[in-house]
Amino acid sequence: MDDRTHRFYDTHSAEVAARYESAGGGLSELFSVLFRAGQSVLDIGAGSGRDMDRLQALGVDAWGLEPSDELRTEAIRYHPELKDRLIAGALPSDPGALEGRTFDGVILSAVIMHIPDADLLDFAVAVRALLKRHGRLVVSTSTERDDVNQTTSRDAGGRLYRLRGADEVQRLFTRVGFRLESRCVSEDGLGRPGMKWATLVFCVRGSAARARH
Image (cartoon, rainbow, N blue to C red; front, side, top):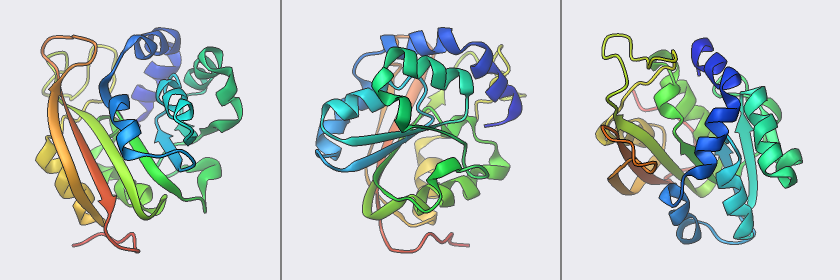
């Protein structure tokens, strides 16, 4: 996440968290199919903690990585039980307390659209390093938005939105050692017109986090 996007989430944390908490269905509908009780799952860009809470309800050992101090505060306000499970940090440069840990699953919901092009491959490699053999990665990202300036790739609040299609996302993660299990495109979960999302599920293909050149 670049500095302007980070500042937006710190400044608008209460508004953003309330919006996240109001969203129903969406990615969380897949959790009971993809993960089982006792598995460990990391939510990168945990936001309001909504998805962590839903994973915990399924008996999943849920953890979150969130770079915004203010959003972590909001997440604990909504979900106090997550206090010791939210980690400060951001990939690829600042893994926080995650270094050396691995998980059965990783969730990237509304995250990779905020990653600058220059950091994207390193980010994908860092995500791969967090997963155990045969671990699952779930990616949900905007593919279309009518509120983003096509020249600057930013919205009115200054947030970076790199709108990458499902094909591009698939190529990125297969390059660093994942195998695609499924993908779909859907309308916006909050009912906002002019927006579409791609959801892709991957499985770790091998044992090494290595980019193919």
